[in-house]
Image 1: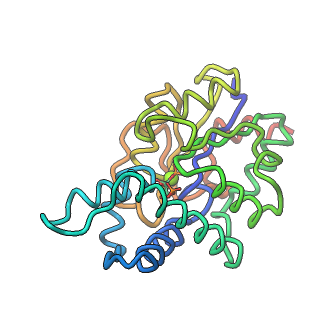
Image 2: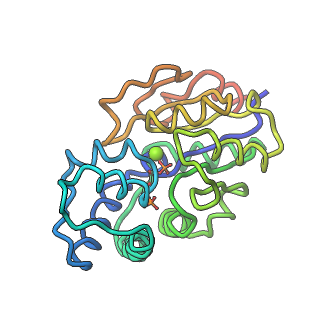
Length: 233
Ligand code: XBP
Ligand code: MG
């Protein structure tokens, strides 16, 4: 039986990627780099999970002789980007995607365990739960596996395997929620059934292998398994 829900963060809980993109571009400018990622660029760049990894993938496409950052510089720039992103979230009007708050509340009431498996780092998770729930991340999601804790980011299954280990549950008793193809593959690699709600940047992707692909998590879209588990009263 279903015992836990494991959520991706960016794109699944909220449409955060525009804020990430803004934070990247502002930080590039602050560092004197003439890099600027358009929406079209970012759609492709998002196929590389993780900000530092994404910058490295981007640098690999630059012409010979172009300015490149060292690994240490990427780390330092990304730290600045995280600070900027946190400020954007704190002072912006970020909203959870439709149905997310309700589903999480119902799941908690039904005694399901709640977890996160995200490629982004822990400070960004804290910024989001603070902005959207007014709570610390651990008070909403007792189990959290974040990108800074694993060697291999999505689509590798490591992050979902870590969340499962912390939950102490087999994958068949859990359900993962993702918005992207790399996230879907990460969760599937850990043996999890996956509900995909495509987001602004992933709505043109193929999501083969998903147990369900639905526009959002509002109640009329819930898969039968969730309805049975959460609306049994
Ligand atoms: C999405 C990502 C992240 C964010 C940027 O993570 O790939 O890299 O775009 O965050 P998920 P960082 O969907 O798994 O939550 O710059 O902190 O990596
Ligand atoms: Mg995502």
